[in-house]
Length: 147
Image (tube, rainbow, N blue to C red; front, side, top):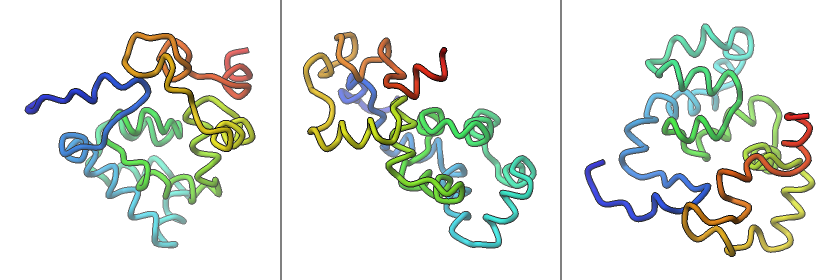
């Protein structure tokens, strides 16, 4: 890390800074390619073959194949670019955001309508709020996956 980054202590948050941008450049360019119908068709026909055309890391490719958006973000993906994957799959942004929190679409919507997550326990890493790593994934979607 070249610069001091006090924001790294915000739980459940990855700031898309210059370092993340460099890390995810090819991943994000792949996502942008999905704006063209012909590329979406090629990707859906053989996801791995299409991904292999991009100089992405294996971790980035596996994150895309698993549709693990949190892994994609950790690997340098920007949510606004990653939304192209969701759109290719017929998912709304709300569905994608819900999947990133372990919530169903309805739980996520209700949480956001209710004002979002509380800042209590979520100001810095190590507290005990709902955004802390020890509480992820949360919601019914996460419980179903682990049951």
